[in-house]
Image 1 (cartoon, rainbow, N blue to C red):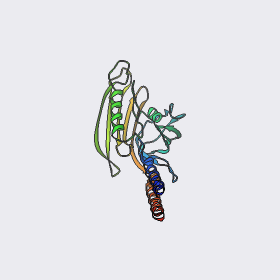
Image 2 (image 1 turned 45 degrees about the vertical axis):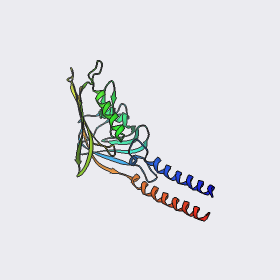
Image 3 (image 1 turned 45 degrees about the horizontal axis):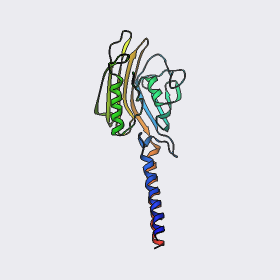
Image 4 (image 1 turned 90 degrees about the vertical axis):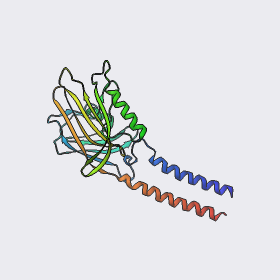
Length: 247
């Protein structure tokens, strides 16, 4: 009899562990690819440069888009960083989110790099570390050529009729001896980690500006919890029958 209960206990542990493994990730669970496909995210390009800009870090060649077009990200893998396929203007390429941040200036590349990009990790601990790194990246210390003023706050932001509870960052680089200093505004949904609104600009020679707003999210992963729950219930019934049979 004890042996039967031990087997049942191991089965129940496996069920609970499987459910926890699905949700235990620093990135939102909705981003993980599933048997049903990949999460796809789109942003409307509100404003962008009228000249091509290099994809030195994340891809090859130069990208050129038009205001009113869409930037699209298909999430291919969720690891220490987000890996995906990006489509922006005339270019489509595979990259990680950190390199995308470098090329599109979605962050502050100081002595302490702060490169949140399109998606950040969620949870109180991760958001706190994100906030601390943001301020560290803009510190006025010797050798930090992007020193400036960083601020952050929580705000409810509505885009396309959907309200998001966001952690917002605003960065203003100190005046530079050449060109125009960087100014960056990034608002991240605290539930999913997605960039809801981004606006960044600078000028070393050719003026750069990129303003994007979250426009759509396709979530095939959203069906997975239903399947997991269904399988768990089914396995639980098997366990119950197993116990009753051997009483």
